[in-house]
Length: 276
Ligand SMILES: [Zn+2]
Image 1 (cartoon, protein in one colour):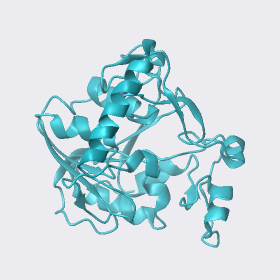
Image 2 (spheres, rainbow, N blue to C red):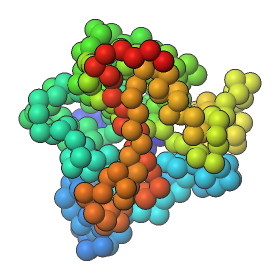
Image 3 (cartoon, rainbow, N blue to C red):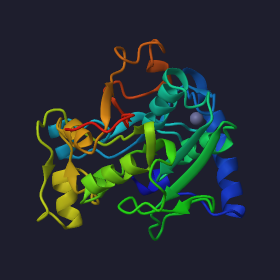
Image 4 (cartoon, helix red, strand yellow):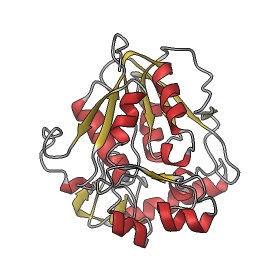
């Protein structure tokens, strides 16, 4: 949940100038090598994003670190946004049937697409932080105490949020609660498959130490392979969607400049509660 990705400009001249700037930048970078599936434009390269830190390299954290072809020059989608969009569009009924959707800490590029989709009853929500700007349509919500009734939503999208929350199990339980039976959730986090067990230590609290040990100043853990078990403990059925294997109908994804290592954590709320 980085400031550059999540920040919205308030309406007014600044937003207009930004749009003009992004249009000119999009023209400057146009080409045939990569296509952004979200805005539909093609480019000779995407823009770099992320930070290169020793812990990210050492632990091979997927969904973190420096990416050379990360940000779309025109719509500012990230590689993560594009992969998720392709998955939702091509592998699910997300855009094809009426869906009531909760989108936590909405990524701007996805927000623009979701808010225009005629089939979606779209609820973007976030816990506001000083210095972050969101559209006035984004409502306030606390992931540890969601103000929605049980079994409300068909979908919950919550990407790169759980690694910021000390009590992530409570957040998972809340997401599960507000989903309808058979409801679906995408719960992406930065993750190291080199780690069998999630690394967290509540004594690591300073920004400098969190950056050193967790890879970002406001992260409270590095998820390991047991992330799936944590989701299952909240009640979810979890499908790990791997590119080229479970996610093959799109063919090769290189042209969309996605991270080939990224897996999608596609979760479902069972129709009947299962005893774990
Ligand atoms: Zn784009």
